[in-house]
Length: 74
Image (tube, rainbow, N blue to C red; front, side):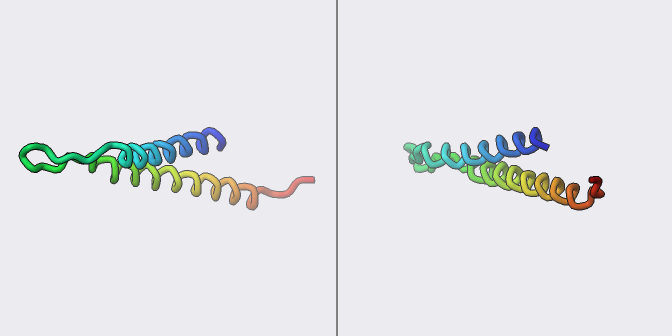
C-alpha cells in the first residue's frame, strides 16, 4: 500500500512540476506574430494531478474498507 501511495505522490508532484514549469517559462511573440507558449503543460499537469490524487484517494479508501471488512480476532 505504501509503495502505491509513494507512486501516486510522485505522479502528483509531476503535475505540480508541470504547473510550476508553465508559470516559469516565458510567453513570447515571434517575428511573424505567433504566440509561443507551452500550452501542452496545462493539460499534462491536470492529467498528472487528477491521476495522482485520484489514485491516492482510491488507495486510501481501499485500505480503510479492507480494515473494516476484516474480521476481528482477539
